[in-house]
Image 1 (spheres, rainbow, N blue to C red):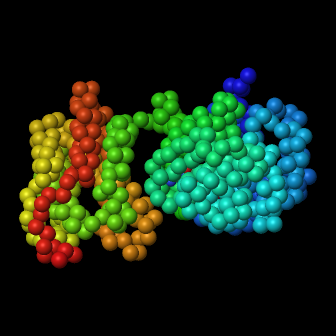
Image 2 (cartoon, rainbow, N blue to C red):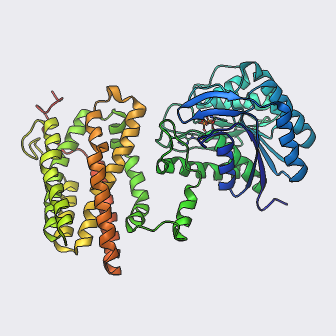
Length: 506
Ligand SMILES: Nc1ncnc2c1ncn2[C@@H]1O[C@H](COP(=O)(O)OP(=O)(O)O)[C@@H](O)[C@H]1O
Ligand SMILES: Cc1ncc(COP(=O)(O)OP(=O)(O)O)c(N)n1
């Protein structure tokens, strides 16, 4: 019978910053509903920036750890990660021969993505010889090439064929992973020894993040846990991928390290914690969570991707700026209306200052790019979405209760700050030095803008605390409508503008 809470042993190296190795394994096992245990193969001095040094304790000590666990606990699955050297590989192999648990997943760790070697080169033969002891091997593409003793696959089709050769040579299942492919997809497939066609294949859009430290460790230990529970590799992989995607998407919630940060293993527990009162629920957090789908749609727009990686055509960028300049004119009026209706001096000053900054600082930035004095000077008046968005803002700030007006203007701060953070990541990945929009993107990362966003959120939470339920409901509707308008604004077709003479356009 499948255990309710699988007991899973991670045999792996350490990462004192907790993102990879057995620390990632233990978190992933727990996140998948298992009970995690660990035996240390190597003590690694590393952080999110790279590996500094490796200490391998005497192998007798490792054997004693493995025996201590096996003599006391029924092990449902083992995940094997960093082994490092031939004596360690031999020790773990002997243990598997004596006490093999029902599920064995081997992640053939060789080199950290940050560059440090985690397997001695002379241990590669021994690692290959061990593959037959595993039910599933989970190499990344460079590791797969070493196992196959071939060049690194440069396409997904080549990777699948290589995975099949390794599976056939060692009589094991291979998980071929697309994380190291270039491109915006991350396919994964299970390939067996019997046929070249994958037994199961998954595909998905690459999550645009630098925080991928420990993804391989996390996926393999999640798979070991799920397989012990379900006994079906394809089903287990489907669950593990969905969870890992969330962990990559929410990695930005963690503020760990200055390099490639860890994934958020317990992103799915955050909501439960809040419902137990572990964190005071903020109304703005509720609104933010409700807008997740719209924000994802924004991140996937061609315009946003092109702006981030710098491939957006200058004509489209300038036409967008021209519309944004006209939008800022309306937005500034909406902030002025809110300032006039604000219940106290602090709020009045905040919105009045925001209105001035919109008209002076931000609009000026746009004008400098457009080299035009007036909104609409590029030849097109406000487009359909610009008109709809500004009318919506003016109606909400002039005619609805003050907290509702606040909810209408907040997405322009918050969604912009968030898209700006996302664009900054895309720009960094694309090489910010030659990025044509780097200076413009930097304005969104500006600490003054982030600070204004935090204040606007606080004011909204304050207003929500004193608001009647019907007003809070209206705040929610209006916030989501404004987020949808943000999306439509980024997605709006380029109006037929007269761009000749604008900076950068012949
Ligand atoms: N940016 C990303 N977006 C979505 N999935 C990713 C991303 N990076 C890695 N993955 C997934 O994480 C898992 C581990 O990937 P990979 O990077 O190939 O392994 P490793 O961490 O061992 O180098 C795979 O399922 C891969 O598809
Ligand atoms: C101790 C230890 N084991 C494995 C790794 C490599 O982790 P992995 O999940 O393959 O991902 P990257 O961090 O290399 O992207 C490690 N760093 N430390």
